[in-house]
Length: 637
Image (cartoon, rainbow, N blue to C red; front, side):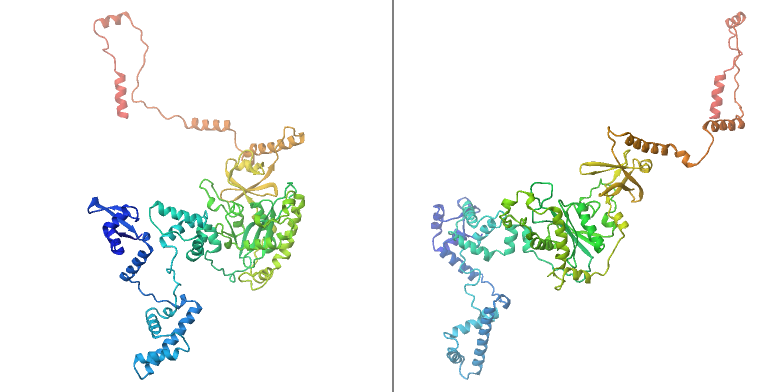
């Protein structure tokens, strides 16, 4: 913010510094007090340029331009409109004729100029020498663009809203809360009052509204007031895709669509909206696989994918969003949801079929062209039903206020699925698409022409490749289990429990046929199959109990016959112990050769010996064997 000292303001206004200080202390002039060197305790005042009287402000701007003249800018023709370029060309032609007339005239330059102006009066009434001279100077300084009369066309001409005011207003206006123009004007005025900055009265509301369109680019308005997503969808830079280098089945894109219509699902009394899980071939925009479901799920995704594969072959790549129905551990992998404590990641269904899986940018409809197909389904299919709900509340037909309470008023779900099949196969895929690389042909035509390679699999291999994978599990006494629809189903077999109890495994299964599962180890090697185990009720029949006991006996028999199954015959453990003893006795004990032999004798004391001891003859014939043994131990050691 530009500010003037008291001395600068006095020089500009012609007042004395004393009068200026008085006006500030009296509140007549707006000023900001600062501290610095000098008298009066270092007190100084700075006067904002924006608070100047309009006449003084104009004088200040003129003096500033004189001190710091702006460099002359060459005006390129690209900045001019068609009419302005025509005006510049007309003046260029006139200046050329003037110079040629001057050079050919025999008299002085002044006489030539006067004569030329008189000749041109018929073509250009009011033309004079001053105009010619000024245009010639402008052409030399600014180029051809300087010949155009741009008075009143530049941004700084007669601004009704000063820049410092507009900047504050714009700050408040560019907000996702979308405050109104009047509210932003009030906050702007309060801002300057709070900071004690004087400003001229604000322009009216209509002026601010017009300036919004002139000063703020539309992309900025979209980003700041509507949000980044709206900006990306409407003003974000778009890279055009090239489709001619793709073949059919190179890339399929998949997504879910909520039908914009009510249906009777046969379960609820109120109508519901159901979903379409679809796979679209990117090259041809042909819908190749789809499935109508009450709720999007990983299994609905597999149903739609299998339908497309059985009819059109296996794609090379699949593009989807980050939804859980696609980023499931056994379909596309867990993606960013991986965790360190999960353990082994089994091969996914797409990996088994050698399909590369990619995810699109989050909430980016342009990255998935299937969104355009869903819009066609809404416009051409959903609107044909009485139960059409519209995509928004504003689109909803008024008749639904009466009919929308009861499901019986709308098409049943099985009939809707049949209608969807007929529409996609008989209408959608036969429709001419205006997309890039389609060249006015139908989706079926482009798909057929661009199908170079069709990757196929037998039904048996497809059944195996599309089995669902469980999470890593430890084999328990009950086997392994699947939790589905709040029910726990156990699978077990003699081989599974006998060979792999306590070990980590995973298993693959068909959700539509849970009779058995295929079990694999952590190195993805097939181990065995396990059959579904029915829980036994306390009210079970004798036959059920006998069947369960029979399975237990078979398992126990397998364990009991382990040694017998090895086919090895051997002597008993007692026979082997006696044989070992005989071998030791035959070898004999090692020879004994002690270094000291100590005799141990039985002795009784006699009365004669007592006399000898009394005479001092005790121990005369005794040998110290203990000392001898200790010495021998030392030598041995």
